[in-house]
Length: 535
Image (tube, rainbow, N blue to C red; front, side, top):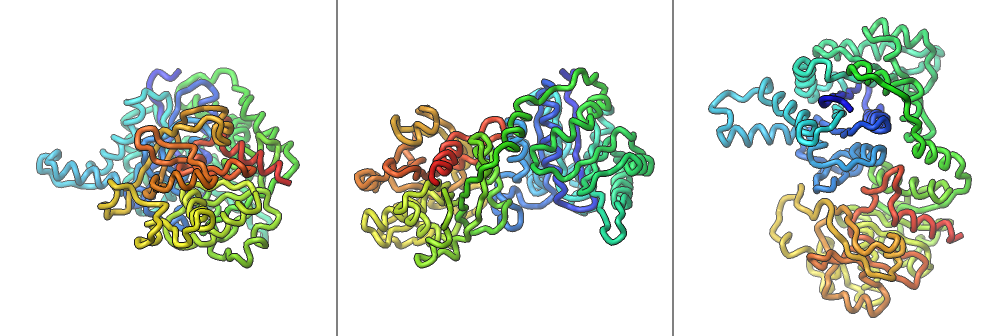
C-alpha cells in the first residue's frame, strides 16, 4: 500500500460533459482492483451550497449520500463503479467554501485580517482536499474539478491545486481530459483544441502529467505523439477514451492502455502485476450476451435522462443480472389522461412511477398507478411515486375522491400524505428534508421481505419531506394495501405493497442510490424479474 496518501486531480478542457466523472470513477476502480483504499471527491464551481434546490433540467438528478448530503450526480457514478460509500466530504461547492470562510470570519478565526481569495479561499479548498486523506488514511484521494478550464468560476480551485502540488511534491498528479474533434468535411482529426486547453492549464501554473483524449474516432500513434510533443507529456501518458457501447467498459479500455500503471509510476509506486478485473468483466460479458429486451416505462415529468440517472442505471444492473437488456421508455406524466393511459403504457412489461417534487404532472402519475393496479402490471413507485400510489388507492379503493398530499393541497380533508410535525415550521428549501440513510423494518412473509432475501431490517437513503399518514394505516391494510416497511424508531411508513398483485410496491426511500455494478439492488432485481415474467 502507499506509505502516505497520494492525490490525483482530474480536470477537463475544451467542452463540458466529456465524462470526467466516468474517468474519475474508472481510475478509482482500477486502483481499487490493485488493492488500494480509495475515495473520490468532486469540487463543483457553482455558488449554490449544494444541488438540492437545482432544477433537474439544469443539473440532472440530485444524489444523496448515506450521511444525508445532497450532491452532484457524479457521486452516483463513483459509488456504482467502486462500491464505496461517499459522504458530505466528497462533494464541495464554491458556495460551501465561501460559506465556511465567511462563518470563520464572523467567529473571528482570522483575527481581523482582510479575507481574500488567496490565501483564505484557496486554503479552505486545500483543507477539504486533505480532509479525507488525513481523516480516513486513504491510499488515494481522487479529486474531480467540475467545469471546464478557462471558466472564471474554476480559477480558485486551479490555484489551490497549483499550491497543493507544490506542497506535497511527487504525491500528487494531474490527469487532464480534453476533446479531440473529427471534422467530417475535411476528414481530419484536430488536436488544436487539446493543445489550447493544455496551454490554458499551464497558464494557471499546472502541467498535466497524463492526458486523456475523448474521441469518437480511433487515434493512431502519430496523433498521440503529436499531442505529447506539443503538450510536454510523455507519449505513453497520452491515453485515448473512445466512445464505448457502455460506460462500464471504460475502465477496461483504460486498463488495456496501461493507465493505472502510468499513474502508479508517476507517483513513485511499483505497479506490480496487472489485476484481472474478473467480476467486472463477468458483468460486461453478461451484459453483452443478454439479447432479450424487457420494456419498462418511466412515468415522470422530467424529459431528461440525467434526471433519473440512478434509476436508469439500477434498472440496467438488474437487467444484466436477469440476463436481459432493459429498454426504458420515458412517459411524460403531464400528458397522461384517463383516455390515453392505455395507449401510453401499451407494450410495457413494467412501470416505474418516478420521484419528484411539486404539483406538476402528479395527476398523470395517479392515473398511471390506477391503470397498472387494475391491470396487474408490475409497478415500482419511488418516493413521490409511492405517495401517488397511496393517493390513488385512497381515492379509488378507500372511497376518498378528494384524498391528496398536503404538499399538493393544503386544504384536503383526507391528507393520506402529510408533513412531519417537526417539519411544519420550515421555510427554507435546501437541506431541510429527511435526508440520508434510515433503518427500515420489513414485515416477514411480505413480497418486499422476499425481494430482500428475507432480511428483516435494511438501511436505505431518503430525500423527502412528506410522509404516509399513519392515521389511515388500518383502512389501507383492511382494503389490501399493506404497510410492510416502517422505521423502527419513528414508525413512519417506508414501504407499501399490494400482495395479491404480481409486483406492486412503493418505497418512500430511494433504493436507486444503493445499486452498484457488482451489487445490484434487491428491489430492482425482484422488480425486473417480475417484469420479464409479465409477457
